[in-house]
Image 1 (cartoon, rainbow, N blue to C red):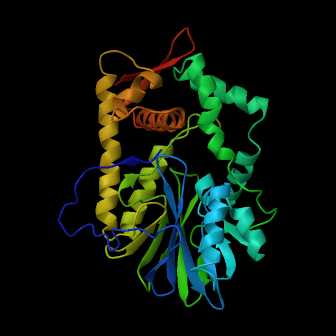
Image 2: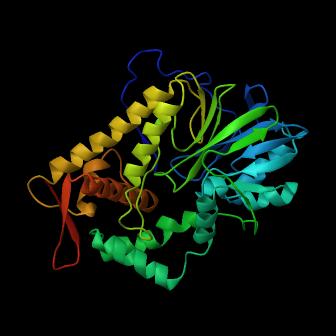
Image 3: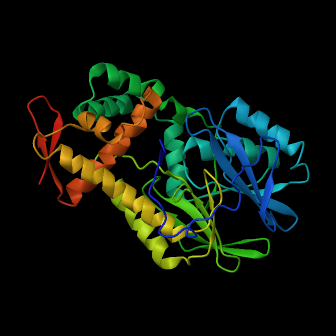
Length: 354
């Protein structure tokens, strides 16, 4: 779940959106010389993902591949037979392991016989998602949800449809090229610095071209919604929100104000540092809501979900993300000393404001 953030920029010009309209399903938009923007549909509330193609000598480098379903394959086929008919993909860079980004990596690399580039952690995480359905892992997930106050019925729903989307990936190629924080990648006439960050994913790849002031931010910084930052059963005490806020702080100090940001969802924009402040403020507001709710009576994560996510009813898919994100805030507040955890006789964790 990516959630909308509503705080306003500090000045009317701080945030600018050069393209208020996105490309249609059979269109691409050139957002800078040799930089093409395509947009594929997704079958959830967050209904699209952005793909970028960067001119690369006699071909193109693609950044992200789209969701692993027949509709996305049909959309790519329409584009490759239409406005991208001239495009030969020489290299695929996948920013992170979520299926709306890595889902068709195998299909793209096979179609164009091109190599896959990812960070090591994200490649291995993608392989993990493809092989995560063992009974041992389901047992660990079941214990994780029950410990955070989900009843048996909700837990079984979350283990079913709620996480089915993770399987929507084509078979990954058996080898890849590793991208590491600080690497320099030459794409055509441009040089991009590789920046990685945690929180939304474990080691998400972002690309920054200083000469042209282009920043491909993946899902770390989005234009109008907040990227999901969650904790899952495989690492139940992870401080993913702390990692995310540290990544945002690093981007604020290392990138200039006037980069054009090309995000994984939404529209390209200017005003990176203002947007980062909005995102940090958004998470702090959630922490305040949690602290207020836990001040008098200890609360479970299940009880806290509607405290934070109260704008619309949650289906099972959204409830899974809301729960993971709520736990991320709780874990962060435990590390910061703003909450304490109590394990009751029923085996459920409850949290109290310090």
